Length: 137
Image 1 (cartoon, rainbow, N blue to C red):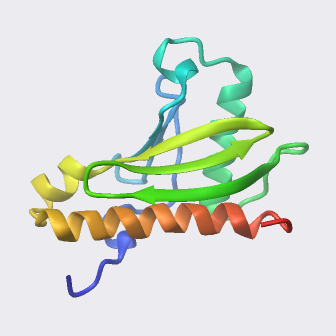
Image 2: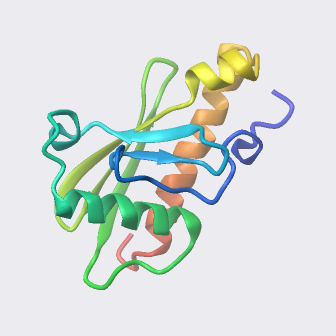
């Protein structure tokens, strides 16, 4: 790929909403990540999980974290089959599924290798954002 620049495809600022608290959207309405946590899938996403999702948006947008919210130990695991960012948020294990495959290979008409490169770059960006707010990373 000439330029695997994720910012051409996932446009900040990022946000979530009251309906899909486990999903992070970009400014154009593209789904960029969603949680792979049990709470998100079984409908029991509580106020703490919603706070984590809101804090994750703050991390990605470069704004301040809520008081007492800590993120740590980020790892990116990417492949063409599954791209996941794993980290801890206030001690809770979180997995974010890096999304956009259909958008990248469908509407944007990228081949699978280029789409995977963009997802990898975006996943690594998330890890770097988390590392940048933690002095112990």
